[in-house]
Length: 450
Image (tube, rainbow, N blue to C red; front, side, top):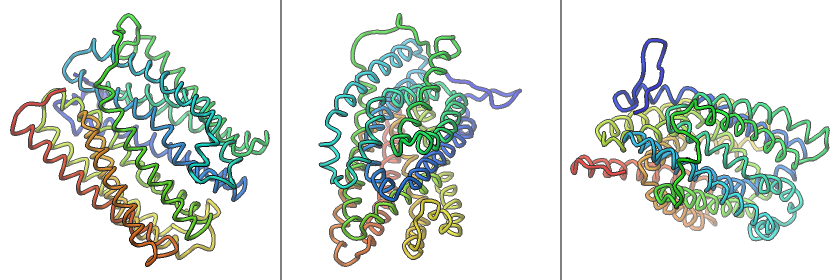
């Protein structure tokens, strides 16, 4: 049972007070998520100052960069999910073993990525990266080679959150992002490393959270102990049951993004990719609070599901959906009035009409995207992320087919905008219906298994 301080006089128990726990976990994570997205915008800002070609090249690389990072994130989600459920059951010893399995899995993933780095040029060629090949490799090569720092940064942040500690990952994440923003202009312009400087700044800044987290674990300040005497050899299928579908889901999304990039290049040229990558970055900033809500609900749903508290799980899921949609709606409406300034930061100029319609479409779309993030993390927390993969696959296939149908009738990227809007709204509704059916089944059977 996880208990942590709400204030000086009152403790909060996740199982008995999930709503209080939701906010206690979310508050620091909102700061981390927002600052993380601002840092990502800062990266894109500095890249845009290198050259338009550099911005275009990195925009093409984002799906592959996201896919590589997904390996580490998926491992973290899987480990977080299972540790949360075992802590909810009071099985601390198995939770100790699971974090060690996560560390071993992280090294395996790094070796796989390191091997893939030798074929980076071939991979980029398959993605259609030709004229920007040199810039793309300069950005991605350091990220691939030193990918272990990102894997363990995410893994330790997730495992700390699993036991109710969101404060430390928040402090470390903000500190790392601040260091990254300081190093970016130094490496890019003073050292004259160009887009490669962005990659090296990201790698160096990610090392600090790993060192602090290792110290935190080894000093005995955590509930889950990090000692190899607790290690039981073998593959934890429970982690893989969450991690593999999560990775496959991200893979499908990245494939969809690559397809969208190709369509935008055909209809708009390089500016299409620049608009798409910029819009995604801005959307992530506006959804940063929703991202924090989804991280919190993943931990809470794991504890409640493990403790067989389906009634509380249904209640907190409904509440978090409402908060996600209201928060996203308020922020996207606010951004609508400063849209020109927001896009102009990245040198996207003379595109007032395109920016207007992109932002207008975001008003109905972003609330549903926020709700979908919450639904995905509930499925992850309860160990049912395979449903997320199935529904995400269906969404991306539908989106691609709709773009293909609308391609001729709606040029200039409009077919992409319509398809993304429709698919995001429908998939969010489908997720909501699915999760309520799952809860109803367990509520009727009065049994939930880890």
